[in-house]
Length: 157
Image (cartoon, rainbow, N blue to C red; front, side):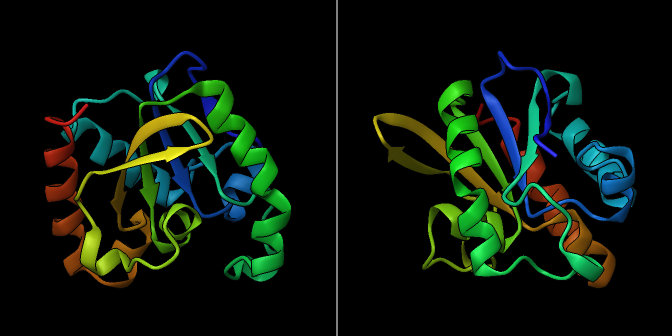
């Protein structure tokens, strides 16, 4: 699953990997987490059609488990190429796997909702790490945190 959205956008969202519903439909974030993501995007005054959404890994891991290091490494060239082609100015990382793809030593609990400037292979951009929407289903208190973080985002793009 390569991702979908506006190829001319300056805003990219990167999640972990496709879930069951995403695998069935061939679209990122089309299940329950996708509905919550749409709600969060509205808080930041963003429209899904105007951004690009993809994942660190492009195939659904068996039994919806977390992607292994080898799987992340195998998909790395694909995501690097997407970043290079889109030249996004802002990348919203959903969850620790996406955050750690860029900054492996950081913890999402310590940096969520904070803009970070990066430069990778001559590309300059900002990342905005937030918790993954699915985390809010497992831990209800993260719902408020995600909403607060996305409201902050409106002022930063």
